[in-house]
Each structure stands twice: as C-alpha cells, then as structure tokens.
Image 1 (tube, helix red, strand yellow):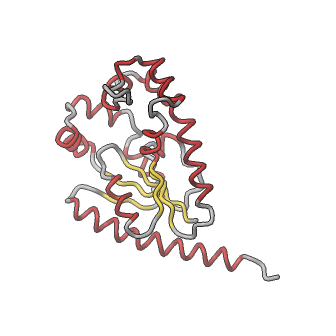
Image 2: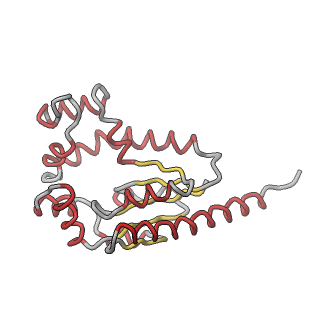
Image 3: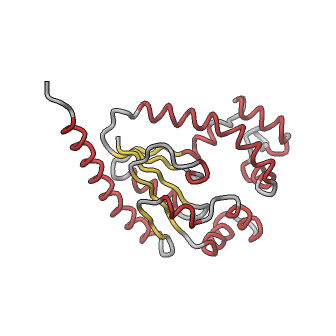
Amino acid sequence: MFLAGLTGGIGSGKTTVGSQFTLHGMELIDADAIAREVVLPGTEAWRKIVEHFGDSVLDEQGFVDRPALGGVVFADPAKRAVLNEITHPPVVAEIANRLELLQAFDGVVVLDVPLLVEAGVGRGYDAVVVVATRPETQVRRLVADRGMTEAEARARIAAQAPLEDKLAVATHVLWNEDTLEALEAAADRLAAELLALAREKVERETAEIPNN
C-alpha cells in the first residue's frame, strides 16, 4: 500500500481532488464521510451529542443537523473540544479498520483527513497532498456555495490549522485559485505521479524480500 494523506482547508477543493483521484483507481477513505456515519441516529456518538448539545442540533428526522451543530461548536472552543472527544475515537477506529482491510492493496490509498495537521502527522504517510487556497478565496466560496455569512466562514477557517502549517508538512501542493477544470487537470497530473511512486515502492519492497 502507498498511503497518501489528503488535506486542505474548508472550501479549498479537497473533495474534488479526492474524487478525481478515484478515477485513476485509487482507494479513497473519506474521514469526513466516516464522521457522518458514526453520528447516525442510535449510535453511541449520536446519543452523546444529544446529551451534551440537546435536540436543537437534530433535524426533523432525528439526524444530526451539521450546520446547526457547527453553529454551536465553531463559536466556542470548549464545545468544539467536547464534540471532538465524542466523534474522534469512533472515526479513528473506523479508519484503522478500513486501512487494515486494504493492507494487501498495492496501489494508492488516499486518506482524506480535513484535520490531518491538527491531528498530527503520525500515520506513516508515503505522501501528504495539500490542496491550498488563500483564506479570502475560501471565504468567498463558503459564502457563495454554502450560504454562510462572512463571519461564519471566517470562524470555520479560524478553527482549522493555518495554511502555513499545512504547507509545512506537504510533499505535494495543489493550488486551487483557478477554475474547477484546472484543479481537475492538476489532480490528474499528480495522480500519475503518485501511481508511479506506488509502483516504485512495490518494486523496492519486492526486491527486499529474500529468496528462499
């Protein structure tokens, strides 16, 4: 397995890059999607969220209303810490489970982790891809595409590690200040590079296996 971490700030285009990578046969583990799964109604994390934050963070069907919950926790670091304590353990456990199932995969496994830097780079990544965008571009996209106010957008951005910290751990950087098509093309080029690195890793590991 060649493990590539994928990260970027909210509104950076990281999800687009992850989707583009899958078109090249890469396996994608989406931590944000897992985070939604572990808080489905009836799960332990869901019960703890209701216990700590009340029914106001649920929608009419009883699912966690992510915008409503975000409005509560992103304005209060203490509440955000409580939410992280609730959701991070089951997310980490599920990621570990999926990585274990892919141990024999000899291609590229992309681990899409929005908070990769905040969580610490300690998973033994073979590469770390950062999708980079200027904060002002992030604000503009969040207001236009997600209906946030400028204040809400800036609060979400401020809750994540600054771009400089992400760039410091990157082995590959994709700047997304242009069109969607330009980002997809850049992702395609990087995919080819990562696949080549994965093949080199397989060849290197195969050569290291002693002949009986």
